Image (tube, rainbow, N blue to C red; front, side):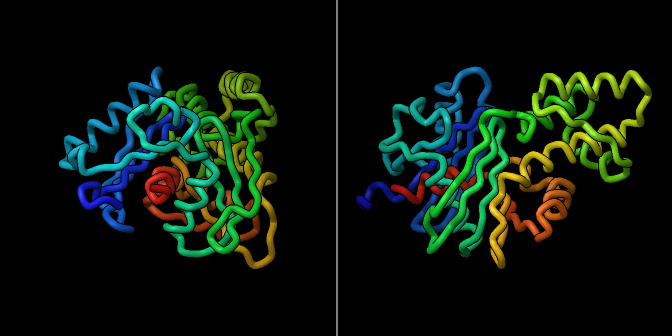
Length: 252
């Protein structure tokens, strides 16, 4: 790396949130996240501006972009695919091979790591009912935030929401509300619907560790229920939502 370019900055432009991670050498020294909103170009500029305003001068930084909006960052020196970045970022964070589960805003990815590299992957980008966006929509429908949704779900009883389509699932929720079903039971059904759609995507590998990245990495109840569905503990990390951005920075 050139002497005057001492910081590596990875920007992960997702459908819901845009993340950035700044590395000095191999150490993550700053992370930030902003809502992507309507414009990926605007989100990329906003997150770069925040990096600069924090004290990382542009002339001291190299930028790499990933995520579905990675072409929306013309200032980036390189762009890298999501799978590569999430795999590399997860290996950095967890320091181990295993199966990475990334529950994003619009898709869910699973990545098998061998020797720190992507050995295989699968992606669900057809059905948003198994994504973070689904939880956001359902929480909004119930007039609460996602944290409260999870807290309610923990006290709820079995209630099934079976639709694979978010629109139809929302109709199911509206119907349950209309019937007077307790909110905790509806919340239970919503969380179980998400983890029930994620779990079948995850390769079952004997002895493998399972790592959760993405925006739900700090949702204890989702982690608990996903672990139960997989029959194995799901491990995460407070910085795991930045795995893609970290992986992009490491690519520089």
